[in-house]
Amino acid sequence: MAEAIEANFKAEVELIPGSGGVLDVVADGKLIFSKFEKFYKPSPEEIVELMKKA
Image 1 (tube, helix red, strand yellow):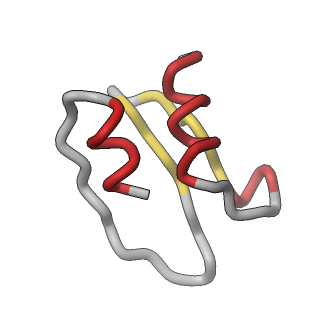
Image 2: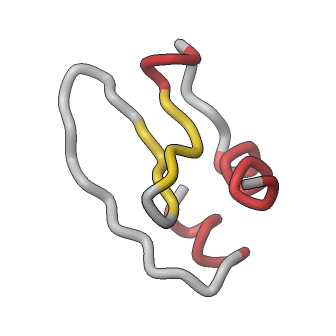
């Protein structure tokens, strides 16, 4: 997922390990995606599209 984000945006991606299946994607302090809220793991392409819309 980090590679897809870096390939589409001039951004540095930081992956922070979590536990319990948590997956949050935050860009510029804004929550883009939360697995806790959506109950599924998105594809890297879906995250890129959500970031483009944000």
